[in-house]
Image 1 (spheres, rainbow, N blue to C red):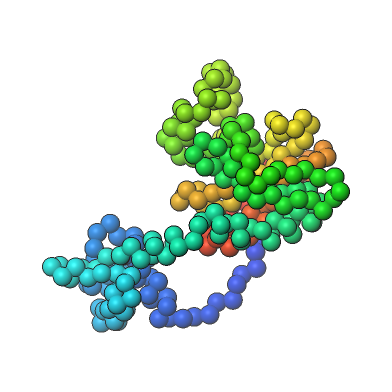
Image 2: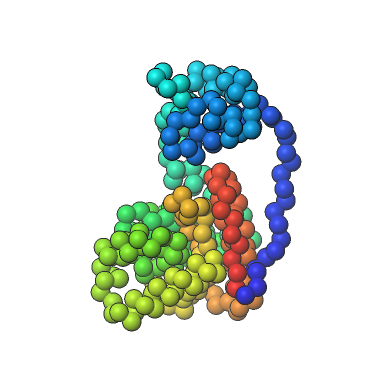
Length: 268
């Protein structure tokens, strides 16, 4: 298999802010620890002096990000970071950062682009950006579909952990109603999707059309969505290759705008 694109994104300029870096290192160290940490433990793990860390910890304690346990003098994170992360709806934030990249993609490839997520037992279309062409496909935002019957749904299911996938499929009537052979084919398809990093199928809803979808987000923390194109006209393999590459580039932009780091490029 050959990579669709080996072009590396341009690196951002780095501006050193040592005090901020030390504070973030400290927060990350506390986050990674399963139990409260002493000043000595933190100094050792961060290769820093206790006196320097004490000033940072005192300030973070004052601001409510960490707390010192009086009986042990050990430090742990408070729930403030959790509260900050939930100040705004994750879906609203996703739609906000996805809108411009999706519009630019739709304009450049002259195909409609839509973004979907799994919510409970359904695939929910969050955002649809129409092609600039006079004849185009439109999938209304808010539409819901059975995940196992859709290209985007199968893409998202492909990144489930085995136990979570089994639990999801056990409650899906479409999946439980098919034969053992069909189930085996379904799991082989999910494995293929995960291996190559994108899903490509002919539409189950619209005969003759080709659907392409790639992952947005980071599956290791369970924050994913599917960015997809429903091709209005048939495409040859080389054209599909180009569309996958363009779609992956857009997905990477959205992922980074969310502050996430999953950046696997699809392969064919």
